[in-house]
Length: 64
Image (tube, rainbow, N blue to C red; front, side, top):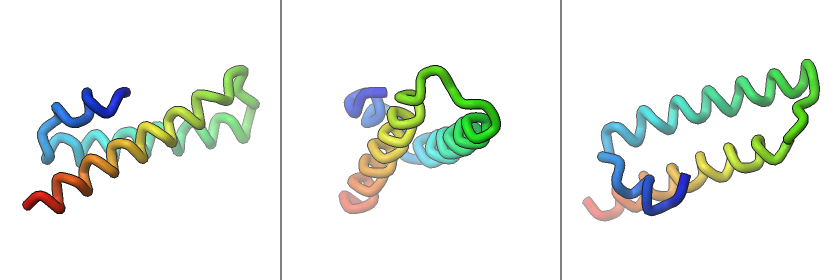
């Protein structure tokens, strides 16, 4: 997900999306530890998406 797309999400929905993405990331890590994934770059991309979302969330907090 691109940063421009994340900025369009309302602040209250962004927090919910972050929680969902973190849960998805944790599930990916668990599945990867049991049986290795073919494309491990997905883990890296998921982690970066979460970081982008948290960055935008923090920017919104600072604007208030």
